[in-house]
Image 1 (tube, rainbow, N blue to C red):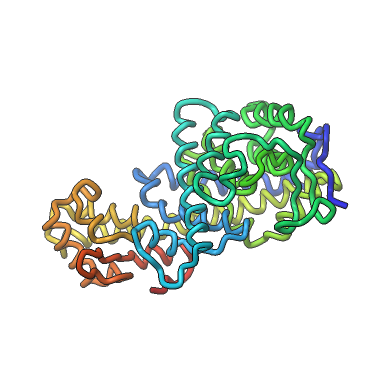
Image 2: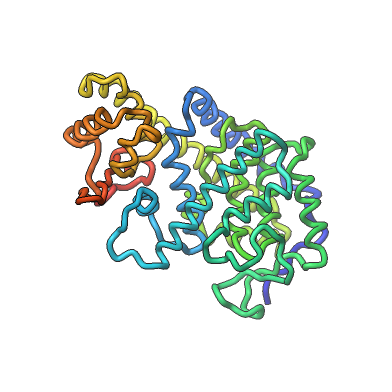
Length: 375
């Protein structure tokens, strides 16, 4: 029998704070250190753009997509990776939609607090043109759904979300809790908020990705982060089975405390990992920013460096278009050749005739993906 939703038990009336307090301090301290680094980087969103794409890849991977960050960026640059099936192209589109939805939500939060309207708009973006686009994008489900192996019957499900009759009232309570300023600790509030969203499962499809997208958006709204550049999916993907079991245990065993402890451990680990990657990227940026004027002899050197950090896989035609790079075409062509000669850029695809060459900033991709970029 599937685990049934915990009707009437959100938010939890009590938690075992003795078990959580030893984790709350380190989690908040780790997040604060990471935010200190972010706030010191004037163009953090540009420098960390590859990490944002990698977050989208890992969050989608939990839902059984099979595509790498490099493949996503190559397709986005106009590449046609060999042996790329239609299923993989669909995976790429899902990752790109995740990134677009995240950016759209972050933009909205600069204007107004998070709401169900923003949530539904994000879902519509997430589902646009991909698998699930026929499942009422931007609207809450109109039928009972269930969680389990893909295509399983309700009898074989592992979890039964909230009954349809209570869904809207459940979402209203969830929205109120999202904006509450009365909770004793914001990270505990976020842990509870995330598990509740996944238990409500308000949409027909895309709930997992949307629920993970909400993590940095909550931290942004409540001013724990200055930009939505906190990446949690690496921890959740690496611990996928425990992640899913901890979510179920809240409804099955009323184990909110166990879930919160698991979540806080993830914040601690990911804050450290995010900080390490961000510092490595920042160091690389400062090194190239110092070196590039010397070997390019160009006033546009810094613009070129900014471009390849924001777009680490790109077509030559994109780079040499002044509308995109801000660099005159002859100068951009010369800088591109110099960066290739210095092996800063690797060739993904040689240009042929009217087909533009595609190039990759390997060192940055290696940092963001945590593995060697292979052409």
